[in-house]
Image (tube, rainbow, N blue to C red):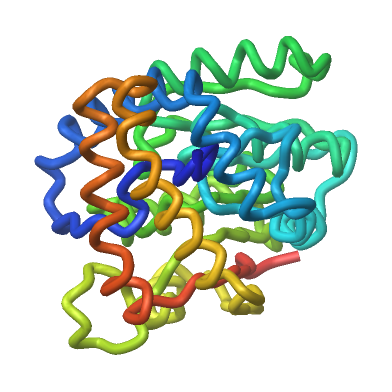
Length: 277
């Protein structure tokens, strides 16, 4: 679904900036991750909509594409002997894709224990478990040492985080001087759109001395996401049988919202650099 389907069924959910929501989010992600990987229907929807741009090897639980993963690998500028972090790594597909592309080691962080377990298994199956570690932790409190990673990435996750500014501050803390943070997410097209997304990430990045270097809107993202959600609406009965009532209902609710929500948001690829050499 969007990471096999959307990495969270609610990639555009309206979450408040309330730390108390974190346990509920973790519980929901555990349930989603446990069910979504079993859905052949969701995987087929993504493959058919994204065609050659669907990262089959990564099996992402998001809307990330092969060109975007290649952009992430190129932008974070790491090579063998270096290490990067992937915040909200999910099942680990994008983490492992970038690790294979770059030759670097990865430490993936996710609040879902279910996702971390799946990512660990995926690393073992991929043959690069010696360069991939996955831990269950909050993205705003990773437990990593300061200045300990050469780069960081995140795929389709920041818009879900109720403590977004704290997460970005944590990225700045763990990055070595000169390290890059590259991520994919969505932003609001206007301040009063009624969404909890920022219009611009630069103020959040500036606060922790991360200099914005790149902000790009991928081609045809809106048409593809619209097609995915249309297919989800059409496949409601099959998805209930595959996913169970709870997860299928969350997907159906999200899919019903998207025709009105998509015109209010923009998908973006963003890169920022920490000061220093």
